[in-house]
Image (cartoon, one colour):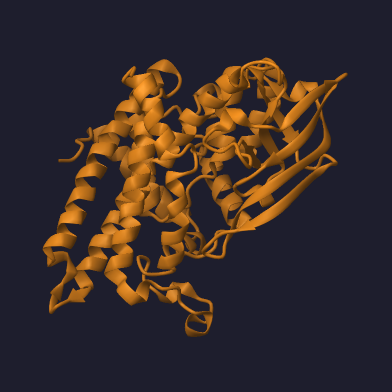
Length: 395
């Protein structure tokens, strides 16, 4: 089963392919293809290339600088960007904060922050999770106390992705400790250059520095940095998370990974024949391919629904669950196909150049370990099932 596209949509697909072929720098696509490090400079350069074309903010309406794409066009762009080994767009400013400001921000906030997000003037990170407040996000302890024209923030955030590169952080803070947990939270924008903020790196199991802890000590933030109304933060947080969970699904990336796993299984020999012919391995590939096709169609249905309603609904939890399960299954299949070769390549063997290895093999262990997190962040899959049972199934 596959989707049928119109002539116009196929023409758009060709336009996207031509664009990536002509404009995506080889050093960036090679880094993605070979599991190498993507620097901040790589990502800023890629964002600038897309922004010049008018394709950076694919989810934004035209009035704010988006391309005005249909859901199918967004789906095609996602597929082709992954096929070209383009980086995933850094989501925090573009796909999370941008939609929040468009719905809840003041006109002054829209006029100031949205162009800066598009132009790359500000790099954003997300201040949601805390020690003891991850999946149970409403129990967060970071306080913001009103003091004249400022909020004074004290507390800690953790698992702050790419915070080491960021200029600003959007934070959930408790502004009323005397009401129900969800009713006393506010959404506040914080300049990371403000005195009293410390960013500490967290080293991951595969050795990378992707996430951080952020500490706030008497950090003074202007009241005009509040988004929406005071104590409206839980509503805003849920709105933002529906956009985040749609992106976590990673349909295009999983489609590309599936092709890599198939190619690897065709050339890997086990018991005198290609691994792709092993009944058990082939059955796992077939199952993940069926699941991926179903998720692709579900993703399009939700994009069309979001286009009509202005935001995705609670059903995005389905995408989050299935997308991360599929992603992890594909990484596991690649690991099993490689066998002992899946172990990290020592630097003295590759001279530090993972480009010597094929795409599906390069740095496989690091990819496998890094992707164990996907079923936890953005709200753990267990929590997503609870959301679905309450908000969709009404159990």
